[in-house]
Length: 184
Image (tube, rainbow, N blue to C red; front, side):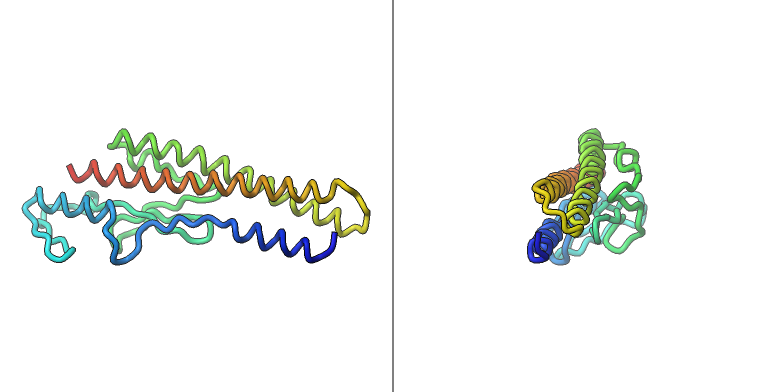
């Protein structure tokens, strides 16, 4: 196997990254809708996307959101609030407990934890398999199983990353349901 194939596989595996950008500035999100609904119920005013609420609103009622960075996600309370927890590859933050006040959110949090663990595990095994295949290919043995090992590892990485992506979609839904139910 020549080095061009190696670089092509490496580039392909790196392009399969997970993109789960939660909320971007200027967009209406579930959090802003929940905040607006809370402001309307508590007598606050909504003006041009800015929410002005009563002073009795506590920090615990601020909506949750998440921001991703290199395979992990920080769960944040409010627009510029504190980081509540970090989830990602083999990280054990209890999202289910965080959103336990919303039954729909708990269901999605369980789905996130399952998909995230499966995806992390299979992607790691796939990366190790690709590495072993590359080492075998580098030993100058003309073995027909080498490309099969590398392709199987790349497939495992792709399968795992798809599950991680599904997990982040479930996390987004869990936070949406939590924010929606907190607004009531």
